[in-house]
Length: 271
Ligand code: SF4
Image (cartoon, rainbow, N blue to C red; front, side, top):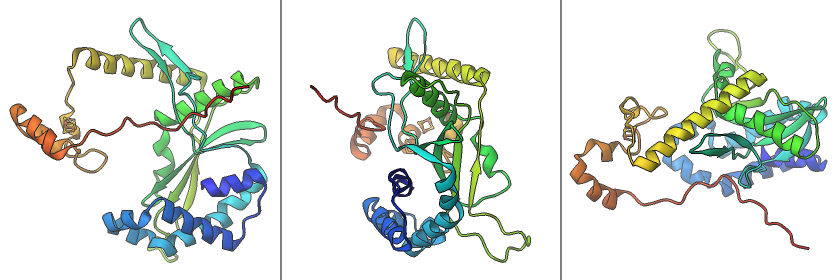
């Protein structure tokens, strides 16, 4: 998608050959051969590399050609927030700024809109309603408006587009007789009142995190241990053991990772 919309931004025409090249290059850079080996069922459903090429060709025909006429691309995968551009709120104990990297920001009929690409196993009747309530979507909406205003544009941003793609190609002859779409878009919108509520909620969550950090007391969420985003939690083995055994398990089975950074801020150019 990044390559598609970078082409749109630069005005470069996409040919069928370039779409195939995009698929091949994305497959290699994201090391999807290794992912396919790790999750053969998911990738089998997707159709492996040939499936990736087919998906992009389908996307080009059904979505991109329309976007080409309706969207003006403002940003592709550009991060924001590490320089404290987007203030969310504060209490006597925490000051909260939002950080993110939307997949895409477009202008459609002068309306500034963040776009997030999502893949799902299949599109069903509930697919488009899954993005509200959400933390991510109001974050993009609010941040886009704050950043646009800081650049001197007086715009109201009140919705985002969730650009959803089904991994599996829908059957041409479904039992229901109604062919499901492979690509579908959701348009969650947020009033000012909802954005204000979201900001308060984010600040409250940060208060709770700050409390845990200060006291080193962490609430367990036992309802998630066996079903953390549809799979067992990575810390299940650790927390299933007795407290005195955990240091040994930590040393043997876990390695300390680097803190996640959503993007690298650009360096200031000095005169
Ligand atoms: S196993 Fe995971 S979900 Fe369960 S308490 Fe530990 S960290 Fe939380």
